Length: 54
Image (cartoon, rainbow, N blue to C red):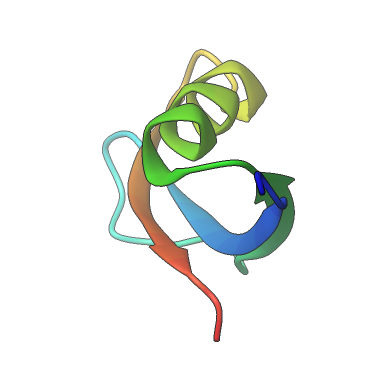
């Protein structure tokens, strides 16, 4: 059974060491959660981490 799991994602602005507050998204697995996070990041941000919430 493929059930959506919750993942916490956070972004960092390039050129700074400020990390945004993590958003929570739903995805089927870690790989698709990473892809979603990349599309959510603005062009001046990069994805810092994607981890599953328990």
